[in-house]
Image (tube, rainbow, N blue to C red; front, side):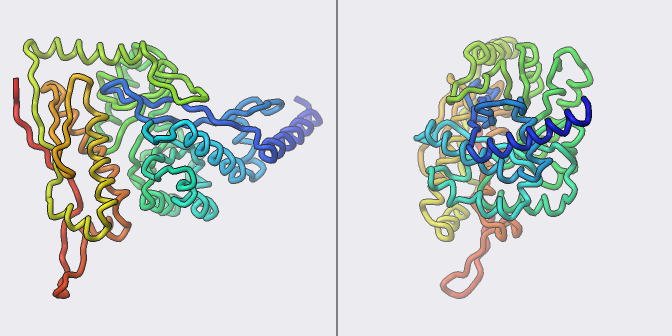
Length: 398
């Protein structure tokens, strides 16, 4: 391309960028994120589309141009407002799972973003921060990892969850994971593509699964496009997945592709048939490790907040169970789950990991740093109680 043609294209792109922001010419689509243990939708990633593309042909190019001209903040703010308002409109009962929102790592450290992306803003639409996953997309290396880590802690304190995108790409380094301890690790599409045929990719993802299990994080594989890729990820123990085979981005909140859901169920059924000739079940009592810790939480944070924790626990258990399995709440702090023996350990591990990830959003930062709750009694003494954790007791039934 000649210099004059290039200069002309740059001017045209900047003009179109300004026009898109001014006229708010973007709209969101939502791609399902699927729980690979049962085939149900876990949440949705919100993706931006351009209403009238001209010289800017796709969203990735749009954000690159916004970065070049210092308008990333304005574009991301516009997209975020469009996403949240549309999601609230589609999910008026707030029962459709998590909402994953992409955020540039430079923007997440911006004080304007911190001030704007608050509980107050979400309350306008009846959305709690616990439903939002801030998906940090690394298009370039993070220069100030200390400031970035502080910013992530700020959002965790507010109740948001964190996902690091593009794990396995050239920029999403494990140092970022170690510093931020996110709730989700999104494995780059290049590691997932043809994983069923590539032993090296298989070994790398297997290692990431082991790291995630050890650190109470969740692996989310993106870009799943074939049954063979899905089956390989199921074999590896990947818990969440995303891709055209599971569901394409749509303007509405869609369910898992029926063929993919059936494939997931068949995989688990086949696995169980091979592993056990007589199916056995475990009955598991799930409760808080220390009831006194729950009572103290009620005193410090109030009954309404404590009720939200109970609801969160029961929601997690239901999400993990298969259709053939049962959960029954028997009090605000205890439930019974009947789980197939062959997958019981994995299911309980997932329940515990999910609870550990979400419970941090129910404490203030000072309490999390101490690792316990503390209050002054009527006699003026300090009472110390551990943070809430789970106790799971198993009995085998036939």
